[in-house]
Image (cartoon, rainbow, N blue to C red):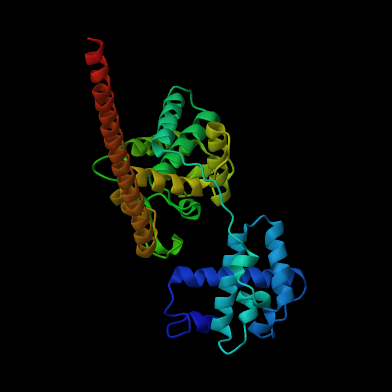
Amino acid sequence: MNDLLEEGGEAATLRQATVAGYVYAWGALLASLAAAGDLDPHEPPEARLSPERLHRLDAEMQRRGLRPASRRHSRLALYCMGRLLAPHAELDHVRRPAGRSLRHIFPLQARLVEHKDTREVLARLREAHGKAMGQEDGPERRRLLRDVALLGVLATRAPRKASLATLRLGRDLRLGADARYAMRIPPEHSKTRRPLEFVLDAEVSQWMGSYLRLSRPGFPGAGATDALWMGMKGPLGPEGISKIAEDWTRGWFGKAEGPHAFRKWLRQSATDRHPELARDTELVMGHSAEVALQHYTAARQVAAAQRHASHLAAERRKWVATGLRLIEQDQRKAARPAKESET
């Protein structure tokens, strides 16, 4: 597999994120084979993609609660990885089991996504920060200030939780001359393997400063590590960041949402304001230029549809008003002869 990913290998022309998806799906297959005691290190790649093994893997994914769309993407990734590892093997059964399309086997399911405006989230965080600043020092205040700073970063810049967990003081966070903090996510900790840099809003920078001065030093083991986010048992990992987001959103909205929901909310909030902001937001969140362009185009289409609908509504109102005016004129004309005959 190393030859496959090296310069000049079969996967050299693919985007890193694409190859990472293939490798992840292949790793899941190998883990399934190992768990069943069915992993033979000398077996050729195409033999591992037998219909029975694929069916077993899909059943495991279904038991874990993965949606049909995710399982279909995994199957396609396995097919593509199989083509890379064994380009001359017959693998049509992977993408077309029994001659059927994967869209029929794994049909799309509509999923209702409830959008939250990031301004509402920031208003709630502003209230929580004010509450924390009025408390005496203690574990509750430290956690509150930490959560406000963490959720403020999620609500305004929405980095991925895995990237957030790797941030280090000094290396990835610095205070600028304008009293605003700048964050840097190195390429090795970015999903797209591209470095990300962004400056926090003035208010979120204030919350970050409160956390660094009044909260972080009080967490156990804070002096022995340069990790930015601390918990009661040491540095926070991705799971700890998820739990913070889920606990707060459950309290706010009655439904637990993980850190990824903040990415959707930020993108949609920007789209609601202006399509140009949607493209800028995509790039800040670390999406590739292709994905950013796709979402920007979709936002422009939505804005165009809204303008067209507004134009049609205005035309309808104009024609309704014209029709009512003509009806009134006809009624007045019809009433005149009656009045003249009465006189």
